[in-house]
Image 1 (tube, rainbow, N blue to C red):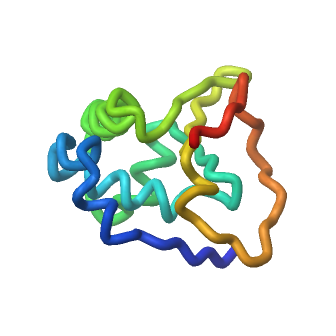
Image 2: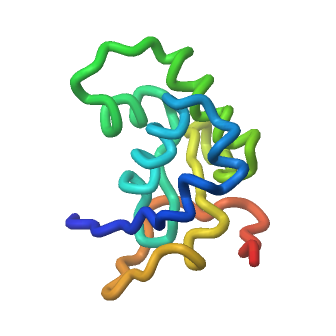
Image 3: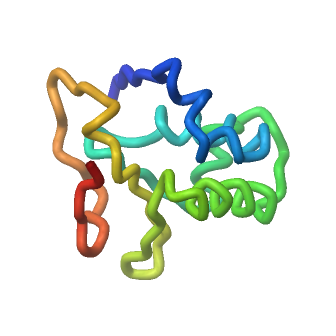
Length: 116
C-alpha cells in the first residue's frame, strides 16, 4: 500500500524528539513511514528492523532500545495483543493528513484515547 507521510519542521525542534539519541530519532522517522493510516505499526524489533533498516545488520536489542527510548519519551505507545508487539502514535491525527484512509489491519491499542 502506498503511503505519503509528513515530517513537519517542528518535529526536529520538539523537546521530546530533541532528547532522543540520533539513531532513535532516525528510527522515529522510520516508524512514521511504517505506520498505517491510523498510526499503528508492528513493533517487534525484527519487523521494525526489516522495514526501517533493511540494509543494516542490527541486533534486535539495539532496535528494541531505540524503540523503547521513543516510547519512554511519550512519542509512541507500545502494546501487545496475542503475544505480538504493536505500536501506535497517539498524536497521529494531529500531524498526518490522510486523504483516502484505509482501515487498519492491526488491532487497536487498549484504551485508545487521542492526545490533544
